[in-house]
Image: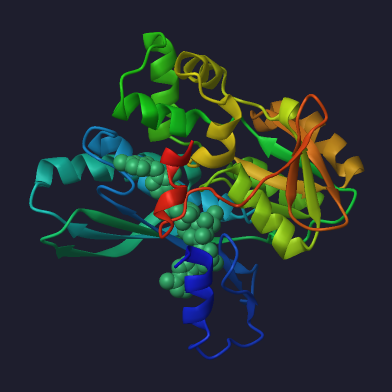
Length: 332
Ligand SMILES: Nc1ncnc2c1ncn2[C@@H]1O[C@H](COP(=O)(O)OP(=O)(O)O)[C@@H](O)[C@H]1O
Ligand SMILES: Cc1ncc(C[n+]2csc(CCOP(=O)(O)OP(=O)(O)O)c2C)c(N)n1
Ligand SMILES: [Mg+2]
Ligand SMILES: [Mg+2]
Ligand SMILES: [Mg+2]
């Protein structure tokens, strides 16, 4: 069982939606036609033991991250978040004080991104704590994963690999400096949804966009498959968070594997015509986020990475997959 094929086979049982559904299942968020701008909506669940542990995140940052990851899917459509719903299945080890901290974390996200929690649900559970966030937003021209064209520049925002390296420092001993560890842990616990950047990308006509929840390899394969292009990326161009290199060195691990297969960086990866990429670069400072070309789209399919010695490696979509245990972070 694999996530994508599971969803595809299950939704076959549902009647197909009408023409008012502009973007259905298969993207970062759905888009539906309304009298104004299209509404976009996305939901994500975080489960104790799968997405977090008391040892990997504080209650406040768990609130922050749970809502930030849904906001990130809105950013990946080039949208503006407006409203959120929050559902909790509360396990016995959570009291009101801890839940208060979770909500303070939600409040930071709503204040920063100008949205509001307008409802939710609360139940008790004998199992682990579960947090589901749903965010609804609007986007004039939502950016899908299927618009990439041969010749497009492939780019990413920010620096990659920090989240999974941060998780590693939280779960195991780390040999790098305390400030280095703190930077990685911050990336893991407090991802930065690229909302303004996403909105700008929509305005200037970025062709395809995805946020990086499962790892660059997985997200690029989604763009390649849905756009029917081949993504050719260059190893030397992938921007790594500096501390990732330090951590990889200390563990004799491949630094690129954190970016490709680690996931949870919540940066954006996209495809854009070369002349528009120049506009992105010119505005990177204004958007307060680095923007880096990592490759090009070509005719064909799949994702390949050119190593510095010229060797081409096929990059399989083997990022984080909830139902493929063998492909989890341990495969590094
Ligand atoms: N249980 C489900 N039923 C219907 N659609 C789903 C279900 N789970 C996920 N999806 C849809 O499948 C697509 C891929 O989901 P996912 O991989 O979680 O996206 P993302 O990585 O952007 O959060 C999305 O369009 C999502 O809405
Ligand atoms: C305790 C713990 N173990 C493992 C991970 C790593 N991890 C859990 S889920 C995930 C992928 C992202 O979550 P997912 O539910 O797939 O989000 P989506 O793709 O739907 O946005 C990763 C890398 C973690 N964050 N915490
Ligand atoms: Mg996404
Ligand atoms: Mg999801
Ligand atoms: Mg995922």
